[in-house]
Amino acid sequence: MGYSMEYLASDFRGAWAIAKKDLEIYYVKPNIYMSGILFPLFMLLAFAVGRSAPLESLLPGLVAITALFSASSIEPVSIPIERRTKTFDRLLSAPISVSSIVLGESISGFMFSGSICILLFFAGLFLYHPSLLLIPVLLFGIAVSCFTFASFGTVFSAYPTENVGEVMSLLNLVRLPLIFISGVFIPLESMPSWGQCVALVSPLTYGNDIIRYGFEGTTHFGPLTDVLMLLFFAAAFQILGNILYRKFNA
Image (cartoon, rainbow, N blue to C red; front, side, top):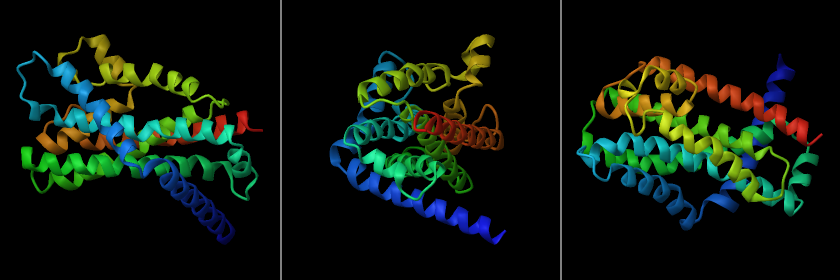
């Protein structure tokens, strides 16, 4: 038992070191923060043109897709760059496990995305004035969503290439359709039955649902179901990331 705890502590220290390295090199830059929020904002505003819904009603969806894009975007960029510069080989030869690498990449994406979403959260407080009882649920929902989406991006960063464009093309091939099937633009209740069934396989569906609940007090699945499904997806992405990193870097 003691050995297992020591091993887990060592893994987490390695993951934290990787997360700090990524934050310092790739994340803490004004242009990265701007791109992390502007693309989702313009996408949402483009979809909202011509609709009668007030802009403040679009804020929960904006937070959800900002979490998705900001959390999943950097890992597919940083890892190919590190493969090209051969720093990734040094990382693999370091006395840390593959689990530490996958978790560390996910933690860095989670922290970057969380810092952006917190800004939107404070904006939402002025627009929605949510119940004090809902604020902890909202913050927890944002945190779990950010980690889930960061783990999602880490899965794609395992693709063995030095070309950033190849990884981003694969990521967007999956990420963009998720936006349109997850109830961000079209409420789940307004979707046909087949659309609601498809929405169940998207982690963004549950992230958007719990964020909307935190702001508006309305939910399709219930906050407990949303959290459990997000944790399920996060665990699945972590496991899949470990499998792919071991397969492609053996």
